[in-house]
Length: 194
Ligand SMILES: C[S@@+](CC[C@H](N)C(=O)[O-])C[C@H]1O[C@@H](n2cnc3c(N)ncnc32)[C@H](O)[C@@H]1O
Image 1 (cartoon, rainbow, N blue to C red):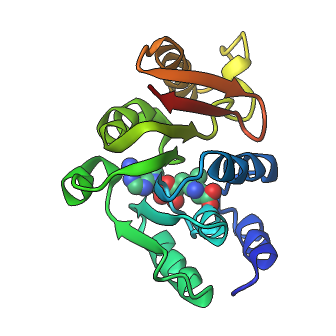
Image 2: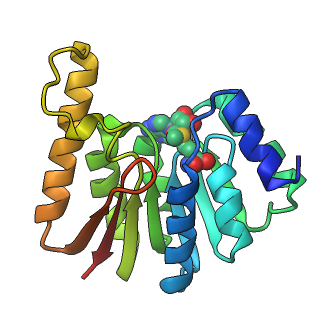
Image 3: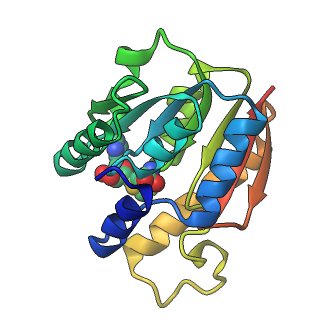
């Protein structure tokens, strides 16, 4: 499949969670604004966001722990002839640091397990250049993050929402980054490394 709209349709039909249109536009806009050359993405899925990013310029290193997703990502990247621009690492991102520790990045895009955002952030922001940016997706988590009364939700969902709230709070208070939150797509943050 080498048509980006068809790839999006495939993801929707097969319930593969991909970045929303508004979030993707935001992401691609930042890539241009900040002249991003090297991206580290946590959470490849079928490489929809990675392919979109690579098509506007930068090289992408992206990490995926699910084998089926990884296989589909590899196939899609090959269909788009982007093997030279996108490197997919098949591993849990919490284990990948030693493999890429000598690289530096201009953009860290976090779009994987929501409960682990703080760990991903702590692990990979040291690889970010000064003036580099971090973008996190799903910080509204279907608007549940702003929901006052969580009592009708399952215990695991409540725990996840609390983790996302805590992550946002820590991000807002992190003096090493200037962070802005955007209520677009499923909720995004943009943090600039000082
Ligand atoms: C929301 S999807 C990524 C969507 C993709 N960025 C896009 O917009 O096209 C999240 C992906 O992260 C993967 N994932 C979750 N936790 C991970 C981890 N700890 N390490 C690597 N991949 C992970 C999941 O298997 C899933 O495919």
